[in-house]
Image (cartoon, rainbow, N blue to C red; front, side, top):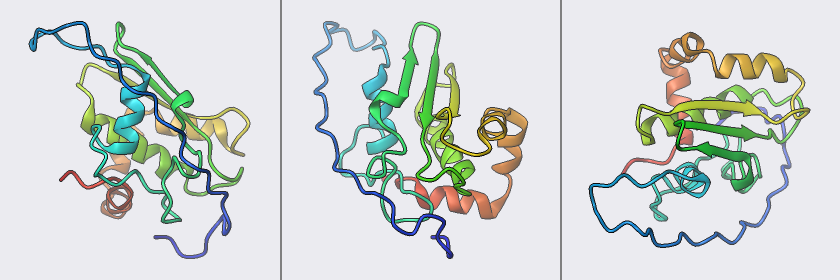
Length: 166
């Protein structure tokens, strides 16, 4: 974790009761099932819907992004027909220096979990960060993301926040 905390006392929220997934009407195992908001939220918080895998952790604290309400189910938008996913996250403080790392963690988790046909859009909630426009541009620029993922220190930090793939 990071030394010199930006937000020393974040608010820890109780986890919301999860909606139950309804059974699919399709019984053919070869028919692709649509991906929805709940499935994306489960990927971000349970690593491919496995409740035994640890949630994505905040880079500064041992708490999860869900515990801190940085990412909520309502902040996930999915258009399966057009292969589009948007996750809007809310940093715990307006001047959060870890916002880029958080956004990168969300992007990497989705890149590792979703089929490659999906366009992933990661955003900072409007009005939630002092450099919102710059962050949104940085988190959605393929070249900047690729360059960030070539930095071994940054990759190590991202991997520490993500659930292990056991």
